[in-house]
Amino acid sequence: MAPSLTREQVASAQLEGDFAIKSESKAPKLDTSQWPLLLKNYDKLLVRSSHFTPIPSGCSPLKRDITTYIKSGVINLDKPSNPSSHEVVAWLRRILRVEKTGHSGTLDPKVTGCLIVCIDRATRLVKSQQGAGKEYVCVLRLHAPLPNPAALPRALQTLTGALFQRPPLISAVKRQLRIRTIHESNLLEFDEKRNLAVFWVSCEAGTYIRTLCVHLGLVLGVGGHMQELRRVRSGAMSENDDIVTMHDVMDAQWLYDNTRDESYLRRVIRPLECLMVGYKRIVVKDSAVNAVCYGAKLMIPGLLRYEADIGVNEEVVLMTTKGEAIALAIAQMSTVELATCDHGVVAKVKRCIMERDTYPRRWGLGPVALQKKKMVKDGKLGKHGEKIDGVTPAEWSRDYVDYNRDEQPAAGPSTTAAVQAQTVVVETKADETSPSKTEEKEKKRKRKSEVPVVENADVSMATVADEDAERAERKKRKKEKKAAKEAAGAETSEDEQTRRERKKAKKEKARASLGGES
Image (cartoon, rainbow, N blue to C red; front, side, top):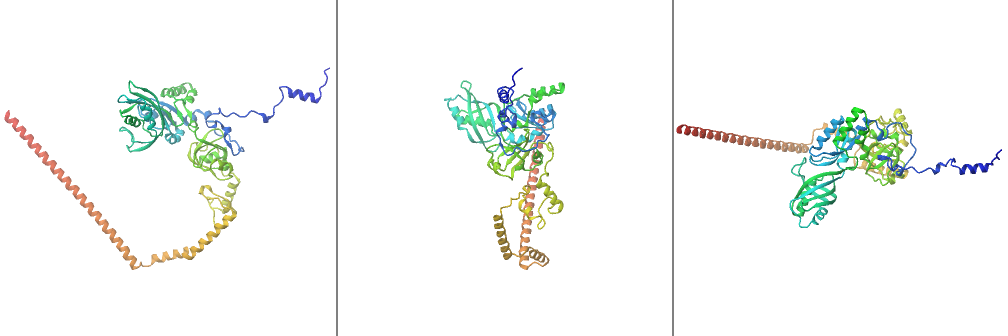
């Protein structure tokens, strides 16, 4: 029979063995660096609150059903040469059988490269992508050999920064002078024998590379023009980010129609969230999502996490805990204020992206909202929650701030007293200097009923007389102008008649002379 073990021996055996349960405090740290799209590095966001109730609505952008996925998708298209951007976008709309498509900035027919095509719901991001920066690779042809090849990179550096540009002769916009910024440019290759140069340029949206090439030729003193152009980056997407051709899109749609295989469509089309990875993020509670979709401002109670270094009036993206983009918004608080304030507006919606009622309605269920509803029902507040003088409780008037009406929060007791004193002084002064509103109304009524004073009548009559004279003068000028126009027309018709008669006489004379010769 085996000897029995003591408690200490059993405990030491359990600790030394692999079957010991490890403490939860020693669990490995969550690695979010490989999470997709807006959830990447989620653990590095600053935490405002971890208390929220998940709602089983919505889903991860990559897990949407194929219909919703297509309607909330973007295509990083490699535009072919010759067709215009609008033609290409129209073809894609017909291939994918969707209602709306838009693109991130027009490319000339001969230009190739990145053209971000937004589908249905994603067309709401077109404006933000059109204004984003662009990158191009251009082939420049010089009209004569360069005496010093080192002058070309110097000329490229010279034409950097804010430049004056006028659109080319053949362009779709008004040819007026404008300022565009060239952020950076590099010479990639120069062929001295053929006078061809290849350079890369990063510039502001709306820059004309064709005009830049002409300016380079002028700076070098030999003349030049653009031979070829390719856009290698448009906004958030470059030619290395899953760029596809028109054939890829058509094949993916054919495969889905005939074999119901949606994997290729998912590879060709990307979720709209991929355009927003460059924005600073604010994570919203599930219960506040639908209110934001209906246009409400995001308040502090609906905030979960936020990015570091957010500035006031900076454009941010509001997102759910599942990584879905809700809206583009303008931050109303900086990171410091978000960390310290316990009330107030976090951000105002600039462009809502998510469809309404994707998440259920959860507004009007808080303690303050319920109290407000009760007061409206009891008649202590107006129909739309506005305060009623003498009826609304003083505590509510002092403490409650309606941010939808842009009211200012109530001040402290001392400030309130000072404001009240100031108001009393102002009212006293007003009473001393001007009559009350009722007296003023009475005076107005009497003034209307009475006959006007003679002086005022003279002034008004003089004004009317001046207006009549001016009107008569305008009519006279108009008549003279019309008469002159008619006279000019009559003269023109007379000249035309004389010319015709002279021509007719000349023809008859020529005919007569020909008849005499025969």
